[in-house]
Figure 1: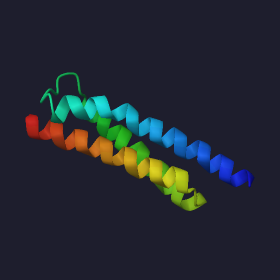
Figure 2: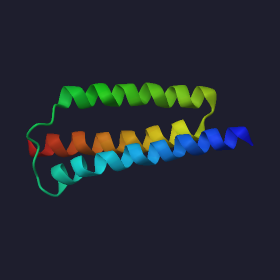
Figure 3: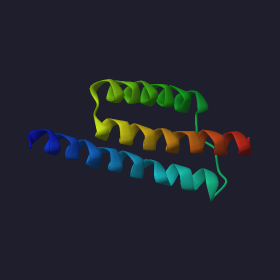
Length: 86
């Protein structure tokens, strides 16, 4: 039972982390603005998220796996959008 609560906290944190990227995605894809976005920073963040995903897989944490896949999707959509605009 305790593991379910721990995973639930992780899932909530993951959902909030993904929601945090929505304004940035909107700025790039809907507003067509990319000023102020540092691609090297986004590449570094995507590398960190990939490593967290691997860690989540190794410890078999569904919360970490789902949160990092979703966050990586957000980051990659921003990177793709910025590259298209530039």
